[in-house]
Length: 343
Image (tube, rainbow, N blue to C red):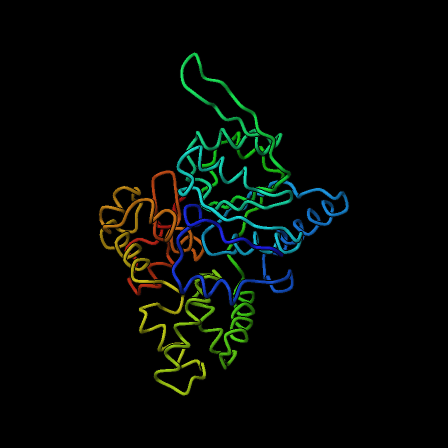
């Protein structure tokens, strides 16, 4: 597979650690990509059918919480169809000219991967409509009565878009994708298998029980699991013999202030605030954000999905509520259990 290094203007900024992690641990085949079986099976059929017709695959929209493998899937699709992949992000495409430059430099069969697609502005989306549908690019030259439109033909290409906020992508743009797949949180067994593979690739001698400890604290997310694995490896190197054991894993997580369910200080502060200041709820998002000194968007996108997945928080018509499991996890007696269980 050919992979070009996109210009700095269109490639999302990445930390060196994240880049190294991607390069070392990114799946190279369907067998390497553990979990998300329904999505993989559908993509295999999509790719196989396109190969038989000798056509580019249809445009693909991937959505779900961050860290579940949307970018890895895009790279894997490109590898499977032996295509060049160009990478950019919604915020990086600031002007129509930026998108025009990217599209006109695509080669036949290329894959354009747009991360954080929900952050593209509406003008950019409107330029994408004909590009996705009829592979044409309309460029307006001049202003006022003398303005004229030039239509450029684009080579056959596939757009793969990834987003954590599907509702923020306009309906006309969503309708132009051939397939839309949601990536869900992983099963604990899948996370342990991912960690076992990562341990082999990173040459970490790990006990299965230690990987289970890391998996339980990984928020059911491969990206988090791999990050915790590297931190546990660092701890084992400095404070042990380099071997990852259950005590070492527990100590590393304790140093990071991450508990056995993967809750970080902010997670605990959110549910503790709901319980101590709002008697478990219901509480509105704005009030919760003000009380915890967190942004509403951060709570809604980063912390709330996992707290709901654990069953520690629920959303009702009246607002957010801390469940009985949240009270139990924090060790706080519930004053009125029946009220917490109201719909």
